[in-house]
Image 1 (cartoon, one colour):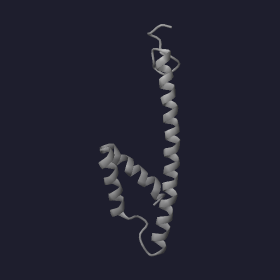
Image 2 (image 1 turned 180 degrees about the vertical axis):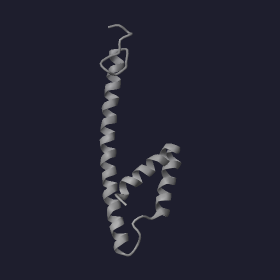
Image 3 (image 1 turned 90 degrees about the vertical axis):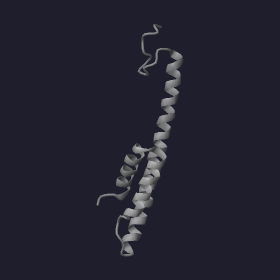
Image 4 (image 1 turned 90 degrees about the horizontal axis):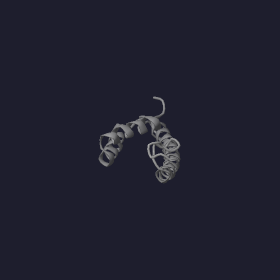
Length: 96
């Protein structure tokens, strides 16, 4: 095999590298599945919280709590963490 030819859509130049990439991509796919499942679980828990807050006469959204979540994500992941937290909060709020 020519070292200038990419192996089966991996961008790798050797079979060995292609194998490593394929294995790592499978691991990423598995992690993504777990992350999606955790997000769906978070959405369900958030719905319970919102329901109870509204039923008790409170507001649907607790902005101070949202700021805590954003701070936590940005503290751990930097600026992209802020965007991730905001997206996560949007998913968990449902339609306002």
